[in-house]
Length: 222
Image (tube, rainbow, N blue to C red; front, side):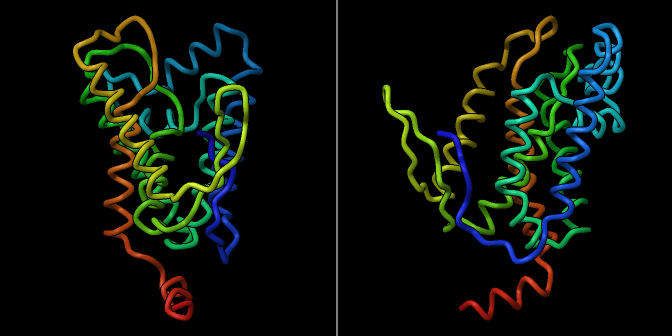
């Protein structure tokens, strides 16, 4: 299943979500403009290395990506789910929320992969936090989803709660399967970063609360 769009309308312009996407794209274009040696140095220096974890590299790793499909997939998910979460939290609070989710994601992955020297990069942990917040705030929304059935491709509307919980448990079970395997010499998907970010998003959106304008609009819609 691949999400195309959601049915939840946003009443404000998602300026922070757009800014995050633009920064990620700009950094990625800089990455691919480098020669292989310089690109590897950039990732090794600014990526999150669990064996030598630092707060600064957790933050910088959120804006690095490993390839075109990596960044396109991440930015697409952020675009679908980020606008509504930003609308609910407000621009400033949403930016803090996003960075905290990325921090929680990086720390979670580090705990489960403590000895790895392989740099971890990507915004997916922070975006998982956005998805977790979306689950809490908009569980009854529906996601127009691209579905592959044998040789046919179709679209269906899937309840957000089902799609997001399905995604979360796939990440959780995939992460559990990697426990006990050494990941010192090769990379892979940071499943526990997704799990940590998702859970952090669910908690943070409840703790941080929604902005007053959003709450008043919700009251008017009842």
